[in-house]
Every structure is written in C-alpha cells, then in structure tokens.
Amino acid sequence: MTTSASVPASPGNASAGSGTVTDRLVEANERYASAFTDPGMDASPVLHVAVVACMDARLDLHDALGLSLGDCHTIRNAGGVVTDDVIRSLTISQRALGTRSVVLIHHTNCGLESLTEDFRHDLEMEVGQRPAWAVEAFRDVDQDVRQSMQRVRTSPFLLHTDDVRGFVFDVKTGLLREVDPA
Image (cartoon, rainbow, N blue to C red):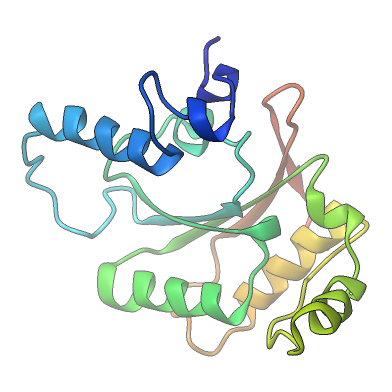
C-alpha cells in the first residue's frame, strides 16, 4: 500500500517538485477539480447517519465503513470525544439535515491515552494563557466510548438519541468492536 506517509516529509521535499505540503494539496485539488462534475447532491446524508470519530490519520472511515460520498456526516476531533462542539454539529446534522443515527468510533493506541490534563497546564506555562477546552484524555477507551454515548443520549438538543452506537477501531486489524453501553 502506498500512502502519502511513504513520501519523505522534509520541508524541501513536500511534493515531487518543490514547495510546502499545502502547495502539494492545492496541486492535488487542481487535478481533482479538472475532472470534477457536480454530483447533484444536497447536504443531507443519504444514510441519515452522523459518524463521530478520532482525527487519527490511520482511520480511513469511508473505506472502513463501506461509505461513499454523500452517505454520512463525518465529525472528527482528537479522540473522537463528544464535546460541546460535537453536540453543536450533531444538532445541526439532525435538526437541519435529517440525520437520525449516530455512530461513535474511538480506536486502539490513541494519543489521548498518553496525555493528561497537565497538557493544559504546560500550555498555560508556555503561552501565558490557559486553554478554554479540556484535553479529554482517557485511560480506558471502552469507558470513554460509553461516556461519549451517554453525552449524546442525554443531550437536550438532539432529537434522535435511540440509535446511538459506539465502537473501537483496531488500528492493527481494521476491525470494529462494539462497546456495550452498560
């Protein structure tokens, strides 16, 4: 399997020519746009599902879940944690764009398992301002999935909380393991 990770990541070698990684992405977009045709979709996902997942680069959610363009809303952040901003996105997804199901995906070997709230303190010491957000670090990925499911199920802003399921994606095997909400 060839991925962009196999390309040496040095500032002067970000693309086949020269420039930054962002330059390489803009060039890739130009190639993409040259063959692009409007798929004629609106913003409402065909499968009426929102997927909340970690931002980890090892998770290719569309391939892992057999999804195509337009099938779902995808909301990603560090840890796949259900924060106030995730609730905001899910509320818009449900109330304005018709989603009814929520799938939560955390994963094995997550970077948040090695952080603590000391990360915020260290940032405050470095920059002179405490971040307004919590790190949301955890030690038990299953328990964190349960907490995220509970946050979705108890949000007063969400209309559809009966089909909320949580999973752990194994980064070594590619398999999902469902987490019992109990």
